[in-house]
Image (tube, rainbow, N blue to C red):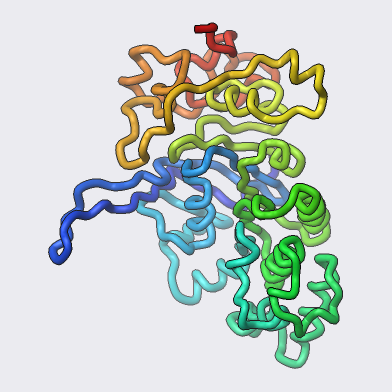
Length: 343
């Protein structure tokens, strides 16, 4: 893999739970993100998947410094951006931009498209002189597949897919190296989702971008990602190349997710054995001891309640070559049995 442009190590975000009206006392914490680590190489797309509430969007917001981590390190080209402020942070933010999930609330309805896309130039005037900004905005509209003459229109005059293209154009305005896309197609119709994903794919090669692509749709993540990280209750439980994750998942949670993903081939759907998880996702304010997935896992044993599994290559595969040789946070990932027994 190419040299990492972004390194995330032991990232933690806890939100305090308080009690009282005047003298608020902290009585606990919501562990939204609890020890996430990964690398992003130049030109790579890392997909992050998981159920709603697993901490994906919180990770995204910390990567662009919209949220300050409770602990951990985010390094951009070797520099820890979690400790930056002022001019240093401003310079880094130019290179790490975000595309938000909701194209309806992420665009200011009182601003024209030209003002929305051109707003980053007000913060970073060195990127585009005032006399050149209108042309640059029109060029960006053209790049994302919109008519440059739409520059004076307002967001309510566009469809959801067009609004997301405007959000992408805004993210490209400063020519960043990294774009964090937080479920950029989840609010769009299925027919429009493919268009936006194909656009992102094209822009990656055209602008030499690296993506952190967050989604809950496994098929979309597979289409665009080079590697995939699976999150559960604030932690990454498995990470590897897309073919490793999709063809040879080793963590029970990943296996359950993939068993529920829709398949276009009817015969393949009939052959596949579904894994039905029992119980609800535990509260991030009171996660289970040891392995956080153990309360819903058919492989769970006493060790799972006592010992937190490390995100590592299973022992059986460490000295072998093959698609199963990727990190998985499961004490019993090497067991061949995938589907839980009936009853």
